[in-house]
Image (cartoon, rainbow over all chains, first blue to last red; front, top):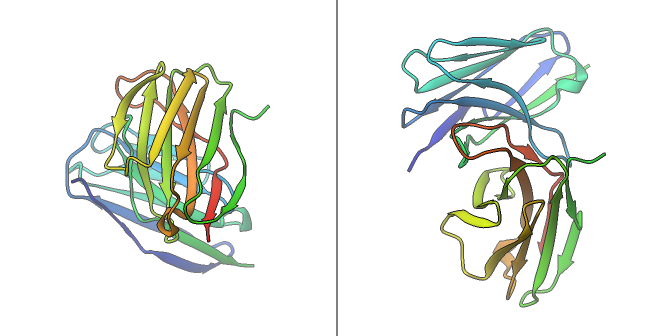
Amino acid sequence: GQQLNQSPQSMFIQEGEDVSMNCTSSSIFNTWLWYKQDPGEGPVLLIALYKAGELTSNGRLTAQFGITRKDSFLNISASIPSDVGIYFCAQGAQKLVFGQGTRLTINP
Amino acid sequence: DTAVSQTPKYLVTQMGNDKSIKCEQNLGHDTMYWYKQDSKKFLKIMFSYNNKELIINETVPNRFSPKSPDKAHLNLHINSLELGDSAVYFCASSSGTGGYNEQFFGPGTRLTVL
């Protein structure tokens, strides 16, 4: 079945630093999604990508759909304390397949 | 107003018991889902309903039985609970079934089986 490999598994950074995480897929799919999960909450969609090469921003977040359609990255610029959480990549339409998540910790 | 709500937020029970988790969405969506998140935070889909009809049924033990009384509600009943059922269960909803439609997640129900 489809598998998503997300890295890194965790990141410990200083406030103000930029963050980069990525995801690779064993299959080709038509969407790449990036979600964030705060402690005690459900995942919330940050960015959705629909075609190869697409680069989309949402405030300080930028994500790209890789040309090969098998990878995607998410960048966060100038991190702030509220960026703390778990970031998930996902693929699919109705049946979402999630990566293992990247846990982001920020030292003030 | 909460878009996707789940009850209870926490559920602690003994092995062998039967329990239910309820989900309601007020977004007017016609597709609802159940996901399971394990202790390593891995999220996996279990079921999906569209207009009260089951459309996705992953390899889930038949002790788990979803029920959708109407398109705004999707409940999950679990029989003969086992230790391995301990997890956080998330309900989600989206509009439509064609292509990708954003899935909105509830706050989760943390189930602990002792």
